[in-house]
Length: 431
Image 1 (cartoon, one colour):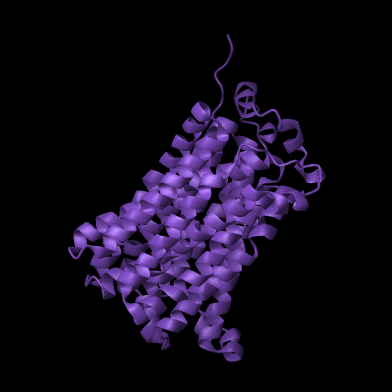
Image 2: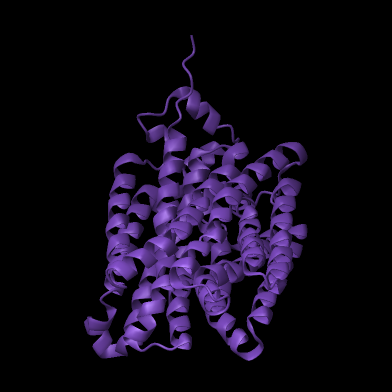
């Protein structure tokens, strides 16, 4: 009797989900602690926006190196080192005003440096998720795999506002950084002990599971990805790479409105107190937790029915267009609870498209999916670098309704770009 396939790939995916959770706890907690940090450290809203943006700048600049390292040395080692790196600087964020860097650069400069270095570490996370999913999942599971892994951001971001607010009010604003940093180091060690770069290296993977994973005809080449040159010229000449990167830039702009300013929008504009605002600020991230993996699963099913190009593009386009409509409607509603529902669903719809983005990088170039996804995610975070500073500036000049309508318009632009993406046309990887 043939033994049943082992299910080790799902344990690997569960660990990626856990890393995703801590990634976004470390990313979002400062948007809540800002409420007490700003008066304690005498920071203006514009200075706080610069601190927010510093993370995104480091995150954007090191996407491609982080992905390349995963392609070259494997995601087990690279993810371990990356999570420990950013966890250490998360802890140091709480001490930024008293570090030697504060003497050299001032308090704001020291905070900017800490956040930049956290971004440098976190830059390796998602491209190495793509590298791991490329190695561990077949073509009909990639969208769901990436959707579930990245969906951890919803859990992390949903937990962060209430947990951070409670720790901040119970102890002080520094405590959430200490807790998150220690948790990150523990998760990094857990990943290093259990994970392997490829399924054939793992003692818990049997041949039946390996057969499921290795349905891709290009598996042999991907197993030797360390020895193949990155096809930079083919990447730069491929229209789909440019379109996906531009579309993900649009997604990144909108995503960072939620990650940086949604909590303060609820408190300062919609009139909720700190704990109420922290509770309702979890709404978008609960929606992301549900709709991000669902979108990846739907993308896989659409690919089975209509092929990769239509399957990925249809879900990507629908998700971002839906986000544009929901955000545009939500900011016009004066009743605050209805507005929160619509804006939360807007975030979920935005991330409904995420599985299609990341699975498409694997579809286009499995052997170099870490590098290619790093290129795409660079675009998202260039948009994200602009968003935390531009959003409050637009709000000061024209009001929060206009500021968020701009985000809705950018989401719609990203949806339209998906129409022209051809994820089913593999990039030739010989050059």
